[in-house]
Image (tube, rainbow, N blue to C red; front, side):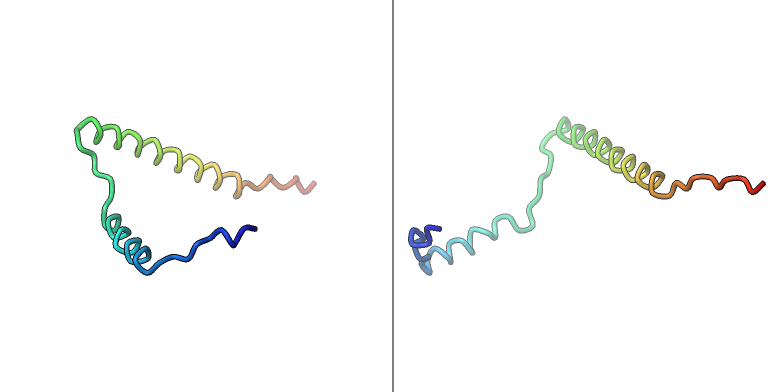
Length: 72
């Protein structure tokens, strides 16, 4: 390991990193056009359907019990 290649971080670099991180707090993606909104909705429906399908199959597989043999 080349730990001698790491230079110490200055106080100014730390403060700049702290100040720069605040830009992302509280921001999220918002579609800018009706086409983007429609595409987002379409993708969300597909993701919802996929998650529901996976959870349903998982539930069915995990709760499947084979029938008991007859008692003759």
